[in-house]
Length: 478
Ligand SMILES: *[C@@H]1O[C@H](CO)[C@@H](O)[C@H](O)[C@H]1NC(C)=O
Ligand SMILES: *[C@@H]1O[C@H](CO)[C@@H](O)[C@H](O)[C@H]1NC(C)=O
Ligand SMILES: *[C@@H]1O[C@H](CO)[C@@H](O)[C@H](O)[C@H]1NC(C)=O
Ligand SMILES: *[C@@H]1O[C@H](CO)[C@@H](O)[C@H](O)[C@H]1NC(C)=O
Ligand SMILES: *[C@@H]1O[C@H](CO)[C@@H](O)[C@H](O)[C@H]1NC(C)=O
Ligand SMILES: *[C@@H]1O[C@H](CO)[C@@H](O)[C@H](O)[C@H]1NC(C)=O
Ligand SMILES: *[C@@H]1O[C@H](CO)[C@@H](O)[C@H](O)[C@H]1NC(C)=O
Ligand SMILES: *[C@@H]1O[C@H](CO)[C@@H](O)[C@H](O)[C@H]1NC(C)=O
Image 1 (tube, rainbow, N blue to C red):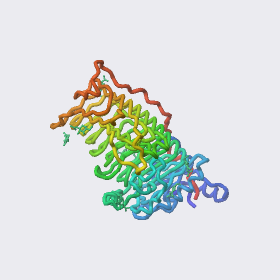
Image 2: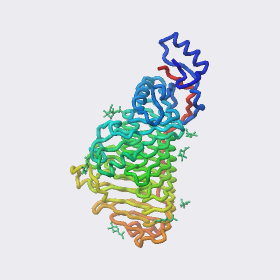
Image 3: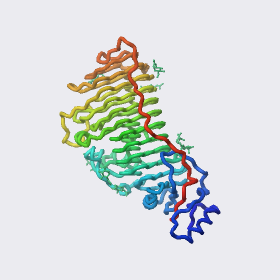
Image 4: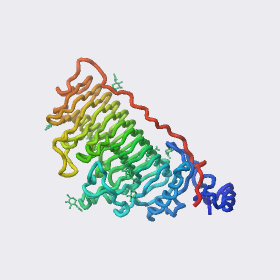
């Protein structure tokens, strides 16, 4: 048995230890050098792991054709035994690894090499149907709900990272079925993590997801960093990152081109959402670049029935995107969106810089309550420069349920060659503006005093990354 897993030429120390350990069968782990095919790799993570293994040691074939679902499952099942002994990492080496859905475990790192591509199988049966989310009541596409390509639930301390390795969802298969209305079960996401604490998703490229890309739900202490997310701008529902009923989430340094919202902040749908009652709160989004001609840079909603509060967004760039920060809600949603702070946004070519939609339809079923009105208040935007804009703002509150405390300051909007005449169209909203051009609507009157809208310090959530290396972790014996 070879101990330097996947190493063509085992290191001498490995051989010595192998001999020793064959003599002492009770020993289950051996120290040895990183496999010879890889340079020593360093990466940043919440935790480093004591044990490591390479996917090929579990029978995987990286030819892009062989299905590797069983190899991922047996590798992760095997590595789960080290959860209480320093944790384990699974290295996905260079190659094309076709797989269906697989589940992660706690105290675990999935490391995807820079030349590795995980390819999502184009086959419904490769993604088991799992229970619909309790805060949604039904699958988002109406029917049931498929497990994601990479799925994890009830975990603590899980890292998905790599040297910018790739997850390719091969989504066209699913988009075509969805468009032809041949399929109503909720399509798989690329990554979904539920009911988990201490989660890191970083340094990856995500391509062509069947539907949403990254969905942390009912989780806390989530770090999403250095992701490149790419999908055709006309692909259906390929949202980038959707924090949903989560607290303490940090999303930073991401570049997203997609067919739907680059980031959509959510918290459950109508009566299921406010009954479940789990808000998204304490969210920081910074250094985001978004391209999405038919959707928002950051959407709050439309499913916001568990509430969304304490959101900070800063240093955001949007290019050829339909809107900036868009609040989407409606009668029946209940819940709230409040205490939102946005600053330093740069926009180039946009339809609506500010967009609040109070009549967003779409309900999970007929059981929604027409008396469940959302509370939208304390929404703050400042320090923005936009060019080539069609409409500065369209702000629609709800009759009898005005959206209040909207503050906009230090915003300069340059218009397209043929701008619309009514630049600010406001109904059922209340607030103030300062130093905003073009001049705002009467419901958000320019103040006599010059001021900046509040942007309180965001909490410095305790995310300290360690430098980890494959060398130093122990290669496991199979
Ligand atoms: C992953 O875990 C969920 C929840 O325990 C389960 O329903 C699903 O079948 C598992 N998926 C796979 C591929 O084993
Ligand atoms: C996961 O956690 C949730 C919430 O605590 C609980 O309701 C559910 O039963 C747990 N699921 C599993 C598979 O342990
Ligand atoms: C991310 O991946 C790139 C490309 O492989 C690598 O150079 C870089 O060190 C990685 N960053 C971190 C923080 O691991
Ligand atoms: C990751 O790869 C993408 C696509 O090739 C590239 O645009 C991006 O800059 C890379 N990110 C890092 C951190 O190396
Ligand atoms: C999906 O839903 C639509 C609209 O409700 C319906 O017309 C169609 O028959 C359904 N398709 C399948 C495959 O169930
Ligand atoms: C106004 O916003 C611009 C662009 O973000 C920024 O450079 C400038 O410092 C801001 N002015 C004030 C007074 O904060
Ligand atoms: C300005 O926006 C329009 C759409 O309103 C677009 O067609 C045009 O290419 C943009 N111009 C520039 C210079 O980006
Ligand atoms: C202004 O918004 C209202 C909805 O509140 C809409 O009915 C109307 O068409 C809009 N006006 C223009 C000129 O866009």
